[in-house]
Length: 519
Picture 1 (cartoon, one colour):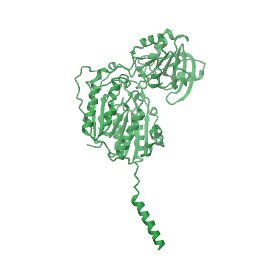
Picture 2 (picture 1 turned 30 degrees about the vertical axis):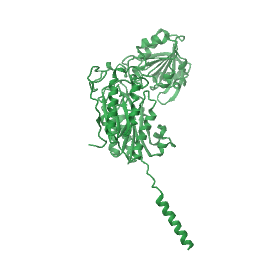
Picture 3 (picture 1 turned 135 degrees about the vertical axis):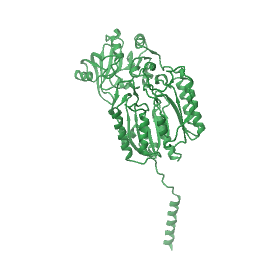
Picture 4 (picture 1 turned 45 degrees about the vertical axis):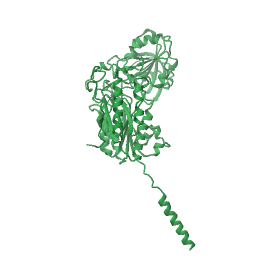
């Protein structure tokens, strides 16, 4: 009897556990894919496959701090990273490079089907030889593999372009809210968190996507969110996105140096409340249009001669000069020599006792090899630059002393410093932008104790901005010329501000984008 009672008790306990235990919730299956670059169609440079430094598989997860092994988001899903590639801004991507990277992406995505969601990590300003709207093309081809049930969340740079095709095939879409892009990581995380939340809650795709094309095309150097009107304009985004019934909101400035019909500003808001989504998009678009005449360069601008004239007599050091026209972080070839030739021709810099100046930088693989042969302290005589973009100035001859040689940089591969008069010229095997203080100090250079620092940039990135004692942006020639009106645009939609300054007010009514998969 005792045995029967014990057996019955065990059985009842087991039944209670079975009844009370909750079924284990299945984690969503999330893929990751994307290609990112800004491509200037006004630069003669071409971008090849190796420039994207493509990552595949689990190595991709290390690109996102919020997907670290012990992170909450990592534990919220099963992750299936396919391929991401991120290139320095540059020229148009070759068709061969694009097709190769797309094929690899699609093949990898096919291996782990099906997916509940996909994080589409792009920049949004890629141009490809013979192909308009590459990001729109890529997402359509991804859709053909993953199907229309998969929820796709797209994260972009605010200097990207949102075509109607990209908007339709993205279920969730967002972009940075700061320029310079100090919120890049937060924006990517927002895209992933929105994706996971919509899947976990069972809500799936937001019911509404409001889209407003704003006929404005301005460079980032005029639309920084550090100052008004950009600061106040972008301050509207977070409150709009925080409304009940709204999932996210975004304003794209667009990319100014590509001559394509999709290149213009865009506002998009997604969510389940039709009225709030539509109103938020229209309100932000109208705000953007209303302040169009207030956008100005983030810093004083001048010709290079005027900038140098001011810098050499200034007692504010370091005096920063942005060599804007060939800015490789905007898509310039990076090897225009015009500015450096002008600097070296000035008498102030001929002697070692002249004002100290750092020039960053110029690619010159042949001169780099000569510098390596000469060694640190040796003399070098050779040419650099203008191998790709020689429209404005020929290769520059550098006759000087090798002050530093560094190997192994991800982008430059090899960097050398050549001292010519009072100028330290950074010459690289491959082009590289100089953003951080360590980029200089690892070469034995101290920008803080240098009179003048000339960098191939537009607006200064945070470290250099905080370091500056004074700053001028020089209106120099190149593939990302800041004077947009002297560039030969032929294919952008017109009328477009500022090309048509007296254009009538446009229709800024929001259009509702069909859901992905809708006919």
